[in-house]
Amino acid sequence: MGFEAEFTSICKFKNEQELYEILEYGRGKLRKDGFRIFPTGQKAIAYTPENKAVAIVLVTASIAEINFQGQEITQVELDLIRKLTDEESRVLTALAHEMYFGEQESKQS
Image (cartoon, rainbow, N blue to C red; front, side, top):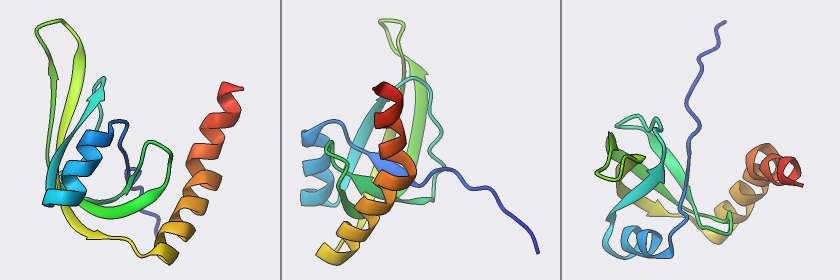
């Protein structure tokens, strides 16, 4: 038996416009502050700014750079695999809150 470590397969949108584009057009970009790792070819669960699971997306490109203002940013290109059903969304939202988002909220308090 073995254990294989994986990157966190969470893709949280903080910008409603970026989320709208991926859900409406099937392709989109996500911009994150700082250098982040988003492995190309990995599927991830997409979350709204309110931490609700909404879709499965595929990371097609990830570019980390320092922009002209000297800020470290990562731009991620995504393809929509499919939107989640209401039941899938409910379960994945609850799990993410318990495993990830809820932990962040308690650290901020």
